[in-house]
Image (cartoon, rainbow, N blue to C red; front, side, top):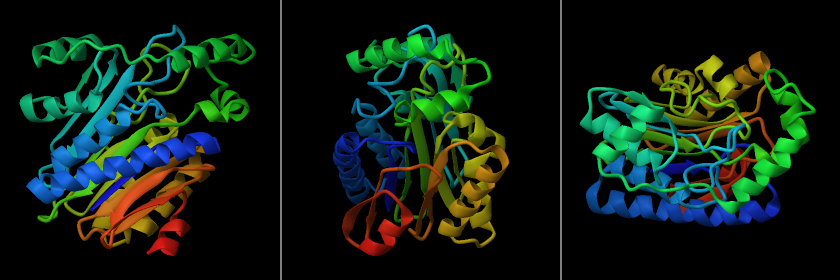
Length: 308
């Protein structure tokens, strides 16, 4: 089983159509790996690489820029059978941050490496130098840089988001389970547009942006400050551990976040039996998943029920 998301937020119809194509393609590639090798880790990595390489998402190529016009990318990956994880934050010059996160998980004794240290490690692992900034990212930056002066950028993020919701989308994530029941979760993002330099959101934080145990895997999206404060992905996986269905778990988690911190968020989840759940408090969250021999696409959980 595979489920992937392209980020919770207020998407335009045009971008949703582009996102749909890439999300479905990513599931197809993940399925090929599972069918050939039954390798949940490689499937999760490759699924997310497809999405990092698609500029429609805020991850890898096309990541949004911080207040100084720089890119700072985050990613993480975790396997549920042994709780091994790898994460990277604030990296600027590689194509696929998810691949470096995997290297950290498998080739080092560490979990989380940031910024300059992560960039030096990428060189050690022979990652090619790459500029992920697109012309569209630069145009978004120029347009909003003029507007942010009307807001207190240290405290009025919610007001800024309300005026420009279309710019707060695109974090990507995936959850995969193989035939042995090994669950792997992953996520990648460019963070929040015009964020303060050095800001780290939920994506690379194990338990917040992603989590996986032997019962469930989850990948979150939205404004990281709310996801961090509720430890959203671990919240879902711990509910599943105690017998709550994944759909009830994701709904309970998002309802709790909405009540407590009032920030936009969404989450996908998959249990070891292949049951799917996803939920969000935003207008959209494009999702693709494999079930009953078919790849499906949905924007809300009701669409899953309609296509099953």
